[in-house]
Image (tube, rainbow, N blue to C red; front, top):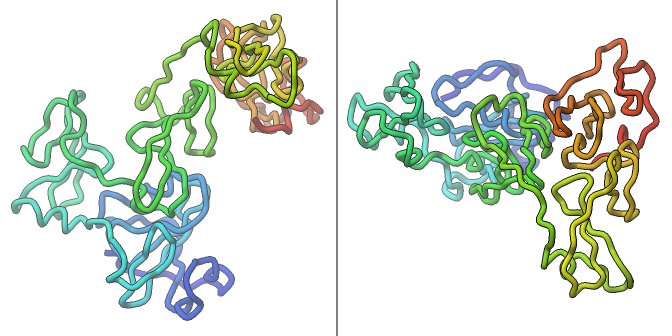
Length: 361
């Protein structure tokens, strides 16, 4: 249970809470930077996986809520007496009408006195009910609440984990705490696991799918299995050929920057082709173009003899080191020369006027 509330903030800040005006006076923002000690699922933990902005529920107190912004917890508060925070709607509702996520004490009540419980989002870790000290199983093992010991991880977590979407507003997208590089779509307190298209990773720090595995994932989490587009595709023409136009049309393979299929009609079988070396396929112009004129969302190192290429969605402040025409690692320009000039392959002090610098995928 949260034990203290700091100073109240202004009415302007308070008005951001999506509740009826009659309850605004009952809400109080609290200061940042102190963490809930009564639950293994802190609100800081939940905010960390969400790049968006809004209110979340508290796993240790049905009456409490927090406000997240860009992966950080920036405020806390409470619903009025008799009301619980309803995470899917982001509002305070009558307690009897809210489905509150099981609290730590409820989970412990189902165990024998002195039992241990696995951490809700990490089955490798566990702690004794009523104790804050966390223990860890050896590599390759997970903790079983039923057996009260560490067991082989081959079959996955021995018990059902709490869904992070149970604390999130409906319609939001968050990183998957158990599979770094994947993401969850939250709807009415439940999650749907999603994978980025085109062999990419989800970066919960910016809410974007990217070619390189995010550094914060380390060696854990989801691993993309690279594959080449097939030489022919029986579905691409039927799905993407524009019937109001005639003649050959070129359709991106949606996996590579240089690849496309040719379709003579919506009934044809698409045949794969590659742009000439040094070019990327621009789907809307139906042409192979210079890479700096197109923010290809796939691996921009592909089909180029470049050592470095611009990282899209960064305003040309970051770039990628290429190895064997494959993205290898992400780099950032220094403060003195903050912009990457893709044509010259160096960081410069003036903003390059290239389409790739200001155009997102």
